[in-house]
Image 1 (cartoon, rainbow, N blue to C red):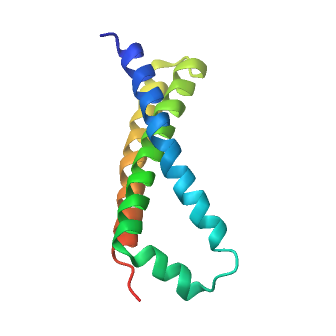
Image 2 (image 1 turned 45 degrees about the horizontal axis):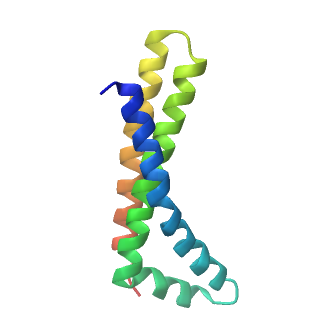
Amino acid sequence: MINVTKKWIFTKVSSAILIPFLLWFIFNLVGFYDKNFQEVLTFFTTEPSKFLTSILIIIAFFYAALNISEIFEDYISDKKIKNVANKLLYFFAIIIPLLTITVIFNLSL
C-alpha cells in the first residue's frame, strides 16, 4: 500500500475514533462549569476518567500529527527542512502525551 494511502486511512480512522471521546470529554467539560476545583480533580482521579482522557490525548495527538505532517508536505519545499520538521513533530507528538498522561495518573486528592 502506498504511504499516502496509509496516511489517509489512518487520518479517517483516527478521526472516527476521536469523535466519541471528544463528545464524552465535552459533555463532562460542560459539567465543570458550576463545580469547584476539588470536584474537577475528583473527576480526573477516577480510573475510568484517567483511562478515557489518556486515550483521548493519544488519539488527538496522533490525528494532529498526521494532519500537520500533511501541511508540511504541501507547503515546505526544502526536503531537509521538511524532514526535520516532521521528525520534531513526531517527537513532540509522543513526548507531550506521555508527559500529560503521567501527570494525569499521578494526580491524587
